[in-house]
Length: 214
Image 1 (cartoon, rainbow, N blue to C red):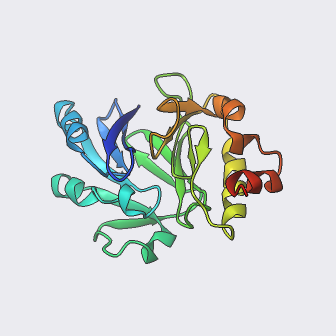
Image 2 (cartoon, rainbow, N blue to C red):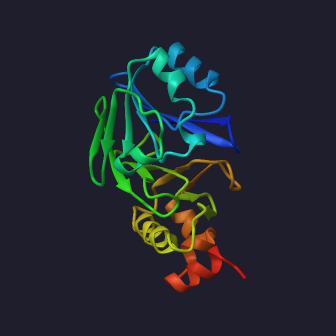
């Protein structure tokens, strides 16, 4: 189960709980902004927070980690490239890379390294079917509903390639993004193939023109 929280923060940020209901184990994803509702949900449902998962090292996706770490003895998971981006890493940091699996109770969360917005950007892919009967992915700022993350011209090719990987996922995959920028808070790969102009780009040249219009 993925529980979405609109926490505000820098710019309409989302934070998440990944919950394995049978074991009551949970992971907090991208803690930021006002985390009171998330914390209340954990406490009222007697969940055990074992992990903090970070999609990338920008402050608006990490600033709430100290608050979570004060309450729960959780492991802080971040991509290896974030070591140079985050000034104060917790002592219980675990660096992750492409293809690694993070267990949350009986759930398996697979790391997809998706550079382009930043070189430490990752998505967290849960292949187990959710309560809605589909796989799920938390994309951070790699992609948004009907959009994609900021990038620089030198990094645009990386972002394009990362989006190609996401396009290839099961069309029913539920997409949970880092910010509430789209017309709906949760989308699917199938919907984005219809509605996301960056997904519809047939090649890198088209993508580049969409990302950097003159």
